[in-house]
Structure formats: structure tokens, C-alpha cells
Amino acid sequence: MSVKSKSYNEMPDFLIIGAGKSGTTSINNYLRQHPDIYIHPFKEPNFFGYELYSYEDFVNKKLLNHYKDSITELNSYLELFSEAKEGMKKGETSNSYLYLPDAPLNIKKHIPHVKLIAILRHPVDRLYSRFMHLCRENRQPDNTFINCLDTDSVWWKRNDLVPEGFYGKYLSRYYSLFDSSQIKVFLYEDLLTRPLETIKEMYRFIEVDENFTPDISIHFNKSGLIKNKFINKLIGQNGLIKNFISFITPLSVYSKLKESNLLQKKLNNIRSRNLKVEKLDGGSRQLIIDEVYKDDILILEDLLHRKLNWL
Image 1 (cartoon, helix red, strand yellow):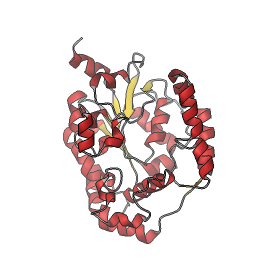
Image 2 (cartoon, rainbow, N blue to C red; image 1 turned 60 degrees about the vertical axis):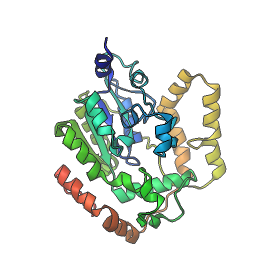
Image 3 (tube, rainbow, N blue to C red; image 1 turned 90 degrees about the vertical axis):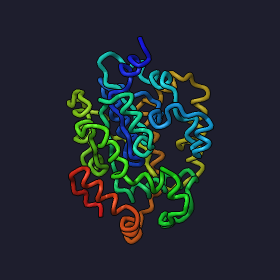
Image 4 (cartoon, one colour; image 1 turned 135 degrees about the vertical axis):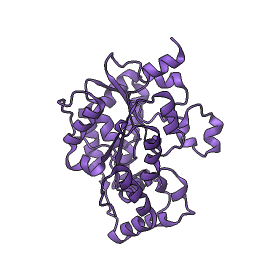
């Protein structure tokens, strides 16, 4: 079998392309529960954004933090789907596909008939949630959120901060390359207010049985400030207990543990109780809408033929 034939047949049937901090981790989990869907536990391989990148490319583009967590070779990427059973719909989630400039063309090159799922959150709320997430990990760009208005700051230089919220700009690339029937855009508020209906709508789009009901009681990857640093050091996302278990446990067993909904639910409940969420004041929120995202929101509304009430 030629590489070209193999790549097409074993490529994913659908991709979740972002945006970050908009529920993609939860969606990834809910879709994985479906018996007719295969999603590898490796989330965010970023293949279509970084295909054929070398170590030097990551260094030159100041993306070294993505180097170890990304797959750049085709055969390694295809291995992610090698355990999918015949007839299963294969997919993966990489938030970077939304904004990385090479991603749309690479996706079109490899899988022109793929289905694309995007879930979008109000861009200011998404940015603030990202800020709170980085605060949780003590990796915040600075200590003052309103500094995101400074276009010369790191807030504008990192893709995961201000730039990721320009949804209209990024999705325009996809709509120019793919038929609109291949793209399905959901809103984060729909996932919050009618989660089951939203997931079943995704099932219909992917073309699997929509009558399957997933466990949607777990909310993944919450953001907030750490209340007790000692507890977080033990059971946080990169806590000592998690790292110790992954070190002493065979990979196949550890993967099964990560997939356990019961275990995930218990861990998420403990982690959530150890987070304090501080709300963004309305004045700052509106200022950032007007100064940063207003024009792009209007582009997005035209693109989706939908009034978003985000302004």
C-alpha cells in the first residue's frame, strides 16, 4: 500500500479544531465515550500545524514548549488511529489548528473531505479563563489582566492569549478551503446550558448513533486560583501523585486509569473545590470587547450568518 493511500485511509474522519478554554477537553471526553468513535488518549498532537517541523523550526518560531507534545511525522500520526476498529469514526482534538497558519492547507492536502468541529467562547471570557488557568499553574504572563490591551506586550505575541480569540479571521481560512457542510460551529454557552443536546448534535454531524447518552457529569480543565498549594502539589494536573503513578505503572494500565470516568470525576471534584474563581469586572470586559475583538466578532457573525450578542 502506498504512503498516499495509507495516509488517506487511516487519517481521522473528524477534527476538533478549538478554541482553547471553550470546552474542548470535555467534548473530547464525551465523544470518546461513544462506542462508534475512536479518539486516542493523546490530546493535541498538533500534526497538521507542525507537519515536518524540525527541532530548529520550533526553536526559531519560539514554540519550544510545543516540541515534546507534538507529532510532526506522518507515520507517527497515523499510529494514533491504528487501534480503531473497522467502521469506527476516528478523530482528534488540537486547539492549535484554529490559529496555526499551516493547519488549514495541511488538512486540506491530507483529508479534503474531513469534518471540522469548532466550539467558540466569548473571546474576552476565553482570554480571562486562559489567564486564570495560567495563574493556577503560576505561569501567568503578568499579574494584571487589563494589560492585555497593550499590543506590544506578551499578551499579543503568544497565540494562546489575545490572538486565539480572533475566530472570524481564523475560521475564514477554513470556509475558503472547505465546503460549509464540512464545518460545524458550536458555542460554549450551548455546551453549558444544553450539554446533552449539543453532544448529540455533534454525534449527528460525525454520523454516529445520536441515541447514545454519554456521562456528561464531569467538567474538565476548570480554571481558577489555587486555594491550597499543598493539595494542588499532590493532586493537581501535574501533581506528585499523578506523576508517581505514571512512573511506576505500565503505559497500557496508566492509559486505562486516565480513561476511567469514575476516577476522573473524583479527581475533578477535589481539584474544583481547591479553585477560587475571580470574576472579571464588567467595565474591563466591555473595554476589551470594544478595543480588541469588536471588528472580528462582526466578521464572525457574517461568516456564521448568526447574531452572537457578544458585543
